[in-house]
Length: 234
Image 1: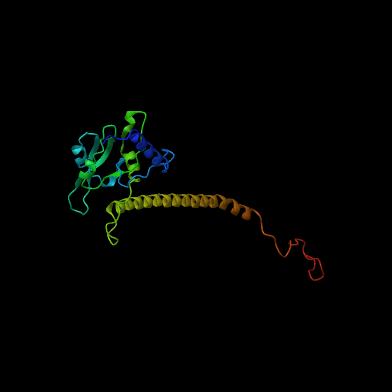
Image 2: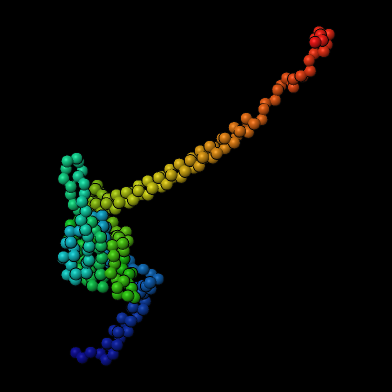
């Protein structure tokens, strides 16, 4: 059966009419931010407290866009007579996002949970060299990583959250200790200044009190001998 002339046009107009009556779904970015899934692959955050410089992420990266530098430090023995240990100290951790293809292999192979996906994606630059993020920048992205949902209401706190809270508490304790030391130093300086002022004022006050003779309550003595009848005449 041959199609009715103009049926295709009628179907197209019907689709147009149905679409025109629906609410638009266009988001006016950047005025309206998109609602991304919590595990979106936006940028990679680094939690350097967990990094042991094992180099697995750099070795497994197919694009070779991870750069790590470190050095060894000797850790003294924990107990007397024990052996000294050596540990790796992270000097540089950088990711070149102009080469990264967001495969997530580095995050999957990290055995100590030092790398995480952040949903943040607004980090475009005018210079390609600025797309190499050093560890300070990667640490800033870490605080935008959403907390993983609990698998069980009675489950333990996720170790990522516990480690982040421990690091934050340690930093807060260090800042509080520095503030207490500064306050103690100021108080000590104020006490020393007050003591010096008292020492400087002490001798002058003593000299002033010794230089002035106390007044005789009985009045001045009369040097003239008694010439009355009881005194007699010499």
